[in-house]
Length: 296
Image 1 (tube, helix red, strand yellow):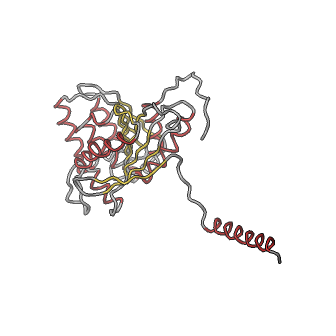
Image 2: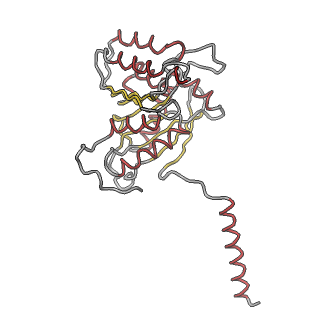
Image 3: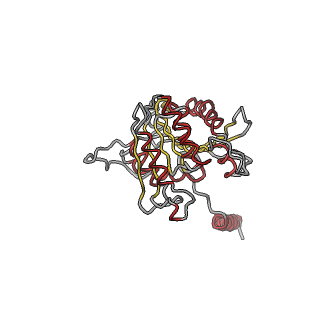
């Protein structure tokens, strides 16, 4: 066999090996324009990964600033919101935005991290540490906002909160403790049953304070999130009750309640997220031309 033939043969063997390796170890899917950044809470010493996705036009429009969508529970919320907003944003039906999902603290089980960080009161009945919502709120305000707004072209006056379940409870706590932190709140299936309805006690105090709220507030809940369907509490009734109480606030913020047909606690969030974001970021009139765009 001459040298040329030997080289060709060797190359063929290498290519076959590469193809076999690709079949055995297929590449993982990656969300375009996304990255994961670790950020440390200087007070607690805990490290939280941030899942970040930039808008499609971010590079082509270097002078443009973007709203930021902040998510809790990054492991499921980031994929859902990234996928659900891609079509309307690319087809000019929704303002483009940076997506930032705050994950659970490293070294903790996800459930332990969220039980600690998203609950506004200490509940001794729970095995996990609870009642860390104030500290987590302050971490987001002082550290996460600072990082995002220094490293990306974020529009500081356009922050959108999206949280689900305990994340919705946490968002409601932020709404009443520091309403100015976010310009809009999307509260999915909020766990208002927490600690015997502790959030309603906070609401009484907040309503008496007459503190102004200029934010828009969207609440989404599945119609099946009731005791009759095996849920521990009637979460639909609680969401409706909180929505009704907001109508009594002195500043009368813009609010919307969506009860999602045939949805339960595990399936309501995608609908809550996209309807809430369309309500906040939607820009296409009903009869407008929103068909110019592409799916990339």
